Length: 111
Image (cartoon, rainbow, N blue to C red):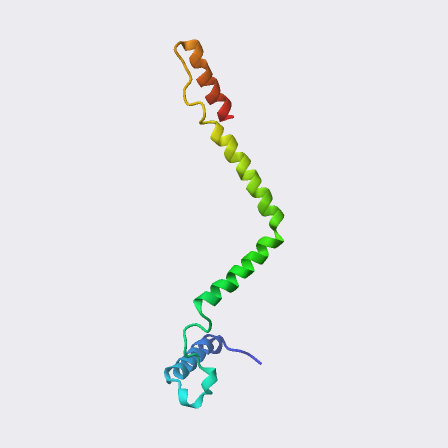
C-alpha cells in the first residue's frame, strides 16, 4: 500500500478544519449537568488557600530545620565579621611609609 505525499500533507489541514468547525459551534450549557460547570472563580477562600500554603511551608521548614539553623548561624557569623571591618573608620597615614598599610590592604584583599 502506497501512501502519497499529497495525502500526508493534506491530512493535518483537514483535521484542523474539522476541529475549527466543531469549536465554532457554541456550547449549550442547558444540556450539561449543573455540578459540572464552575460558577465561581475560586472554590476556596483566599484565607483558606493561604493557611494551606503556609502549613505546607511550615512542614517543609520543620523537616529541614537543621539546614535553616545552620544557615542562620553561618550568615550571622559572616555578618559579624563583615561588620567589624567598619569599626575602625580612621587610620592615620601622615607619611608615605604609613600609607603602605592601605596599599597592602588592597593587594591582600584582591587575592
